Length: 437
Ligand SMILES: [Zn+2]
Image (tube, rainbow, N blue to C red; front, side):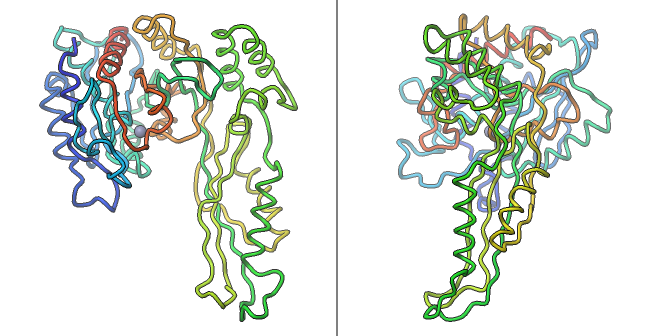
């Protein structure tokens, strides 16, 4: 099974699908879709296809004996390459070297997509018929916000569909996750943090730099940043999902690490042990803020009348935009800054670890990767599945594909590549999962 999967992925990588304004002329999404149709022809011939812009919403009709439908969501677009000269091989070559396919999108997420479509193709060729409707959505603009996905979700909503499970990307099979678990583990994403965008504006009189005022707009922004950065203003709390993560990790650990993980999972107030064992404890415990852009002034010797600062806040399910805005506003007013929330969304609720979709995927991972730890976790970044949140109680953000340490956390990094055996294993895992439906 899945003999030509490396060649197929290689061809998928060699068709650039970088989304965004900067790539209008080389956005080969049509060619990409055309290739998918030929490479996975059995699947595409069996599916009902509803085009949504350049995205594909597809349905495999099931016998409806099995219950509520399920949805697999993913994306065909990839992020740009900032400097191709640092790549070992040209990023859109899809070249195969030493059993790996190299290029932009091999991990995020043409590799998992190739695995999923291969599994569908193989099963349908073997006469498989799903026991319920299975929907597949392939977005064309996930990396730039996923506007098309809002339309796709609206189509499904209009049909009154409620999915048993939505399967999306997010977690992978990676190594030494956050330094908390040794070796490989399958990270099942059960929720994602929200993302809020803030703008802080400082106004002042301006004037010549020879007579600098003590509270110029730039100084006030700097003082504000300093205070926010070096005082803990956000609530520190471990969500149920994060506690589950630590407990599951403890199950697969021994000795001192087991003890500390259990202690960390049960800490209520000071989170001392968690800080001791995890360099990213702050991210697990609450909202984080990152100042991302700053602008002000036009000349070396002129005091700016206006300076503007932006920030991105990643907010967990234990806090909301209202509380965050209130806290930032309070500090901003101390420095006479105007604080506005200009965009974003709150966190999504954590999915049930005992849902049918979660248990089915767990069984398939156990089957294909015997003994591999399976750990629930909350993603820091956003995925397309948030647009389908209204249509299901259960979203599982996980691609059953191994990502080596140099790949694991850098899906948008240079020198993206995928091991062909890992893609084939992922296909086998999807194959096993789909057979349950
Ligand atoms: Zn992605």
